[in-house]
Length: 435
Image 1: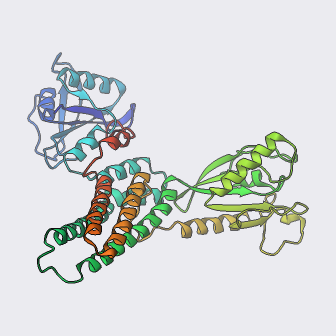
Image 2: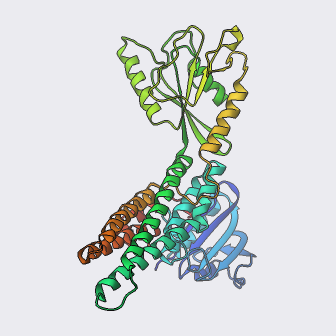
Image 3: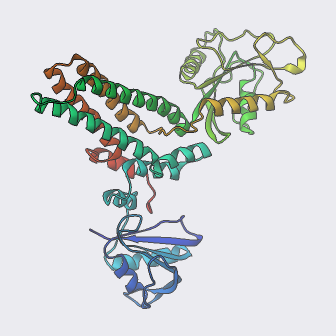
């Protein structure tokens, strides 16, 4: 196994830079960089570091050692905390390569942690989500994976499937022995209960997927209703062109917000109306496509304009230009984007709606599509197994055991216990070099 190294902190220049080494030659390499005794494990010690090739002083900083197997990667790890100049980083890197160490590739450290069974694959993916989290909700979701709660759920479900499979095979192998009466009926009930648990988990995963990737809020309504003005007000900057001319928004404009710790994408779409313009017709078609994919729809209109005829009900119906004093239709909320009247109340209501609709409190879920696909496969296999067990025939039991085996394999792929080589590259390639 090679010994690797990488800058694990931010790019230079910086106040402090952390260079991490991992592998069987990590301690030997730092011993050659400093002629002083190596410090005890997990104890920071001030040391001078020089080039083994030229004896030139590289820098002075802190050295920490983490012996295997009690380290992040499960290998010997050394960390150098140095001054964060580019010159220092370049000089130390040249010295380490001169000692035969290899620069790490993206995700190499975490890959070694996974290989050495320091982390389950769900924890690896959770760590990637922690590194990319932009909101508190995304961070909480990622910590469910890095903390091992998600892996514990999948492990327990897989354990139950294996137990059911073993009992089915025992029924087949020892059909002439005295096995508990009503065994197949009881197993069918266990399979149904487990499939129900997976179905509930998939529903939570669907909400978690939106939390992880961003909740989509679409603004719709007739031209000149003020959608672009509302988008600019939400973004607190000029994102969209605002004009008295109708139909100025032809394509969708997006703004990314943080509402109550949730990542929200607000989409301003083309005004809905009958038009002969081919370009505007395309914009309206795209607007409808965005509405079909929206988590929340905000309909905006104004006095004298037609109320939008939507294929699905809007979550918010806002009547702009309250400063003109016009009557507001029933079910619509008055506001004025010109004076700001009612704007804060709408933002507060939108924030509450997002927080309530996508609250994952007390739920262990993931927004990871790979997990969702594997759990769906396990769920479908268990449904088929339940139907086969209900038939209570020997040939059906053989097929039910195979379905349980398929469910177990699907859950095993989530955990990384089997058949994961095809996904490892994609997962680790998204990591930082020093991770």
